[in-house]
Length: 118
Image (tube, rainbow, N blue to C red):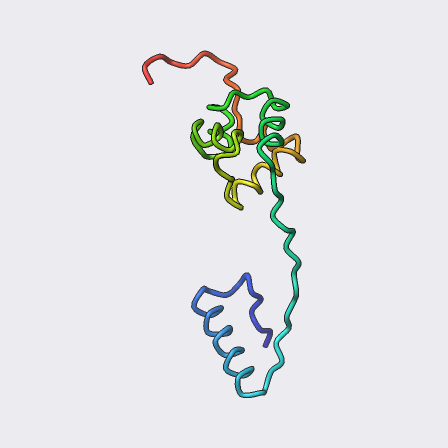
């Protein structure tokens, strides 16, 4: 009889299989396959580079903040060198800097007038 493929199993069956494999490994009956991954270092953007990026994208501080997920005051502080972006924010800045289509995924330009009842 054929063993079920991963996609044919229920979540419970997958969890039981995983627990069984872990137990077999702990008992020395199974060698588990491991893969190493390399994570890109977090890029660092200096205050002038953040401002240059925002200006290149032609975004005011408020809209740039909305794109990155922070307030306009935070963008202002970054650009003045008073605060530093988090690692997550640095990765977003790098994506905006290196991937021209990334901003398009975030921004939605209205092609039809909005209903003022919103």
